[in-house]
Length: 285
Ligand code: GLU
Image (tube, rainbow, N blue to C red; front, top):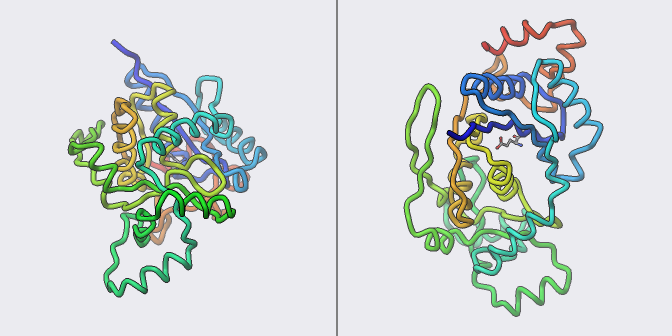
């Protein structure tokens, strides 16, 4: 029998809050119940927003709440060449294209289309206008050579065609069920952001596979993103892990906690003299 492998994968771009504590400790609890392992990964591809000092504080907060993880900690910033390889694979398969529209360019393009109810992705953002799928190789190259900034986006229609089957994923835990993936709801998602060979979606899929993750436990806010992950896994020939998307810890007004809010950060709660046990009570664990 294989040993279950769990991971907690925060982005060190702010301070950990009660929601992270819940996610981390739930991972630990489930891993423990299944006699599994728990790994820690720093999702720090964004070199501008993720700072080593923030990572240091995070590790300290995680230790304080009683999380224990296996060494070494994986840092995505140390694996860019690997993500580049995966990106190159998608480029060779002609499943991604360079996308040059800026935020205002996207808006203009959508206005020009005269479509009133332009579709939105599950996070509420307008889908990327797919017009640049049609740019010739020559035009793409010429814009790139002239230094136009661009991101690599998935040609969703082509990717779905290449996948060829309906994808699903398995939720485990208290409500086991199979979920039909709907990557098409995301349109032409970003696979590699400007000036970097990757994005959250690409790195998370590659890393979960390379770290041998069998059980992904994360917040419901990433439920719909799993559709994109399933598509990428399929295109790379990766066996999917099982997923458990847990409830989110909300503030008194019912809003998701944010890394910029001080009052629910573990650091400030700690400074107010709150104990680890009280944190567990607050998050209902
Ligand atoms: N790094 C992501 C975050 O902090 C979590 C990624 C994941 O668990 O898949 O929101």
